[in-house]
Amino acid sequence: IRFALQPARAQAHIALVGEQDPAVLAALRALGDTATILAFETAPEPDVARLFDLMVFGAADVPETPPATSVVWIGHPPDALMRDGPVVQGVLSPASSAHPLTRDATVGEVAVSAARAVNVPSGADPLFRIGDAPVAWSRTTDTGRQVALGFELTATTWPAQLGFPVFVASL
Image (cartoon, rainbow, N blue to C red):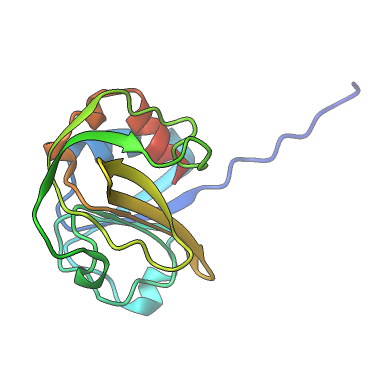
């Protein structure tokens, strides 16, 4: 080999909206200098939101219409995406071992003390279940990937496992 050219790594622009779980912040920090992260108390206006590669919604007022970019709702997806019914608890299990988000992000024995089942919309794949109840899904739209988690990370043991930062890095 005479020489090799290695392009500089493109930086992802990530918006954190609302209060975030420390595990999400730690997993994002593990990405190093490959991401620029900005925090917002409330969702930015649509023309600002589309400037980001990913928006992570924690405990915040969630707009009913998803922003025109990739988005992750942690514990607080829009009401239309949540099922009515009781809170479920149990062991989190992958709905499919072949999905790109769960293939390398092993969950092992993840106990969940409280989750709400989610409606899996058209074009979405369930990611995780508790028993028969889907509690997370993912889909790709014209504007990016959407991921909905029907549980708070503080209600699980998942952030303490190596698979969690792998999942976050895959978003």
